[in-house]
Image (cartoon, rainbow, N blue to C red):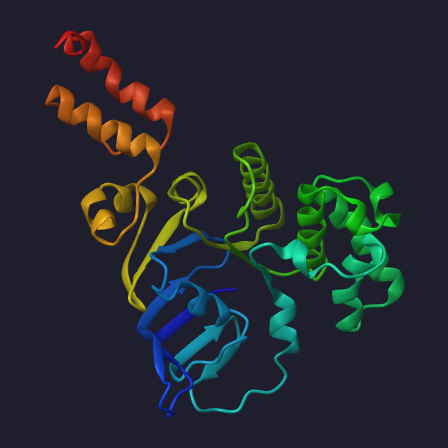
Length: 290
């Protein structure tokens, strides 16, 4: 389902002495089936925007349209259950939310709470546990006997068991080592493709934004600064630096190469293979001997 923000603003503790503005005049559309990353410095409004995606927060100004559901500021909202079933959010350290005595019960908790029969909930648990790279035998174990990586996958399985059409990922690799991070991000990429999900990644990792997103929303001080492709976003590293953000390592290396040898490559490279392909003609001309 398409998601549209029209002139959306949000204030915490509105009309009180502690009122704090978090979003201002946000206008953005996230197309159904797309993979979008949201980046920005701490305090830029990323997390507040995220919580509007399944009405955990309601706009204090403007309109949020989620599929066929229109949420306008100032209007009372009822029947948000269906929306929250369609939009699944994987928060940072989701394993901290595990609490049941077995993995199966933990995964089934959400579907059962939304009226799914016990038989169907267990069937979903058997399906999603495989989708997150674990085996069915783990369903009978206590989640607290598992490794940290396994616990995170179980928590993700609990979100997938709701059968969402939109998957929102809030720093989903926080605390993982590089190998664990890559495995989790590749898993989400596979789920995005095979299930036809709309995937929204909120991240501080420019590497992940460059590698997986089709579009990037760049936020600053509660507003949308830019919406563009990863190649367009990372072609302006000075803009990111001014916002306190970094660029992917491959973009940083390209920039140093161009400065060192006074050349300009044909495009901003997002992968090592792209960079090697762009560098080779210049190396062949003897640039490396400078």
